[in-house]
Image (cartoon, rainbow, N blue to C red; front, side, top):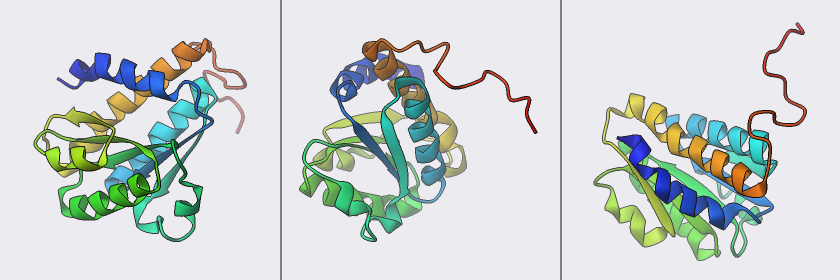
Length: 163
């Protein structure tokens, strides 16, 4: 079901190919997923990416948001959804290009997003498993469009043997 978004993610990736920075925001469990998304795009496309806990946005992070900078927002945690909407509005008001990942039915994010990727509605504890898939696809297609060797990222080993 999640893989049905692949064509959409391919199109979104085209918007990020020439970007120098990409920021990821998440609250609660979504913050862990944001960190994984930022890591993947760094590893294979060599794009500077950072993940931030959305609750810390006003404590310095917001200073990095400027016109056109991509911000990937994870908004799958229902108990934190209203707060994430507020964060989205804040970065959007500063000119960010907002890409949201949320569950089907959360169409309210469309007002503050340039692109929305929907995942199936699941228990909050499982949402990260589903939402990481479009983030991995996004990293893959940005890297592919940049001409990076996706199977052999520079300076990375396939296995770690040093203790």
